[in-house]
Amino acid sequence: MTLASKITLLRVAFIPLFMIFMYLSEGLPNIWMWLALSVFIVASITDYMDGHIARKKNQVSDFGKFLDPLADKLLVISAMCMFCEWEMMPAWALMLVLAREFSVTGLRLIAVGKGKVIAAGWSGKVKTASTMVGLCVWMAFPSHEILGIVITLVIIVTTIYSGIEYFIRNWKCLWD
Image 1: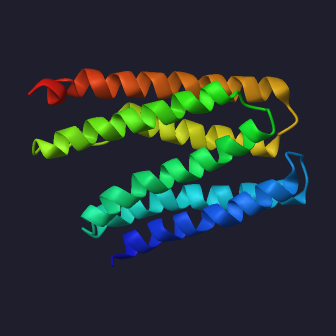
Image 2: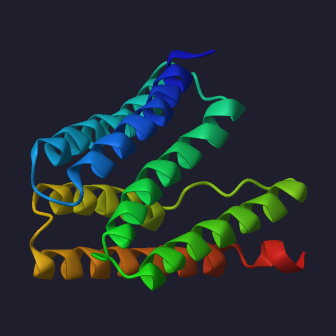
């Protein structure tokens, strides 16, 4: 197993710890929320690290290609689920994110079945980065309602835009 894949697995291992701290915080700005935020930040940094190491040390693997985006989705969706549970984020916003993720994954599976690979697009990377940063800011200021609305809107806009871009750029995979 490559170093890059081990770092990705570390990100996955951080998710239960993150969730425990989030539950203990009860959505309030307290030590548990700060611990959850710290774990989330470290896990988010590993997203950059594993990709950088994989490319720099030529450690790109099929396992990494599978696990890295899955780890990102699990981390982000776990935070969004907590905000939904605390009624700070509307469930329809989380559902929109999930629908985009399942749709893009389905498109990629169809493409792979036809011998094509759909690489991560720029807008998808912007979506992931802005969502991770937004969730970090929200954890730092969980009581700020307007901030939560703005972050939710940024997540929705980047999610819709990147999802549409994936389908526009790769629609031929559905019909070939």
